[in-house]
Length: 196
Length: 252
Image (cartoon, rainbow over all chains, first blue to last red; front, side):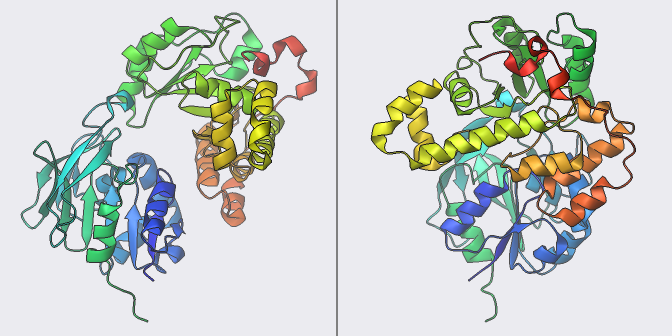
């Protein structure tokens, strides 16, 4: 069985863990580096990126996650996507720079500007997922996409999900909508089966 | 959280406590990247409308401010901004949800630095949730009547073993251990105001309480976070507060 850890310092980690368990994956909550290195992959949930960076630094995960990501897949959603990015245009935060995109934080406004809408998908080798509902909560926007980065999700033509090698990043919350398609894509197509 | 004075000072100075000056709220919003919450008085829907027009991320309809309406809380459904409200038991929690609250918190006893009331409220809610889950369907209407809550929400609690919205701990939290305690009792997070600002070294204490909340079930980390924090808020014995000055009695 694959083990996909969920970064559980702050934010929406329970729903991510539930979605992963629903598709038959072990989904331990990761609060320390020791727990991280027991996993085959990591999900970095939405939350608040300034806070997440502080909490990651305090416990050593800020250094551990890039080391982990050298070999293992990582999927970041909302604040998780901010942390994976290379550059943050406004409200600078010390992102990890694991995927070549730049991000604008809180790009759609405050909490009351949050919304739910359709996401058009272009996931490689995953034709069963054409469209999902995406929940945008104080969401960031991808303002630059590096050449080697593949655009795999769009909201009204604007790129909202990207993949580069073993890193997947989405600016919305796939775990809040009932769909499990994006978690399935990550687990089935990006996470290799563990050696027995 | 934006409020004109922290609860300990409201308690000490008396007078009518109201929503903060919009200018102060705007300055806070322009300074931080994290979500900003602001308090309005119980029943004061015009203050809530102002907070929504300022685009605060959450509105706390709070007993810490002087209530504007003894009979009614705000009808929260017409608002797009999510509300958090205080509660002491399951009935009060479900009444606020029925009015449209998106989140709850224990009332505790704000501004005292004494966690006992928050513990009492959290344990009471947990106990009543457990009771509901054990009930037969025929018992639900009577139970709903007794606790003064809509029966459909009681049915939800019976079937799911939890509230339909997140519940936080607030009112009297002053140490990292207090935060860990409330998290272990089932809070999804904690609100701390006076407990930080009335301590000797607020920045260090704030950091430590955040650490203890994240790692609440790891005593080694909570212990390290608790080290050398200088003095905590002095705090108050609840029984020494005159009955009519208890903030938790505001609202119903």
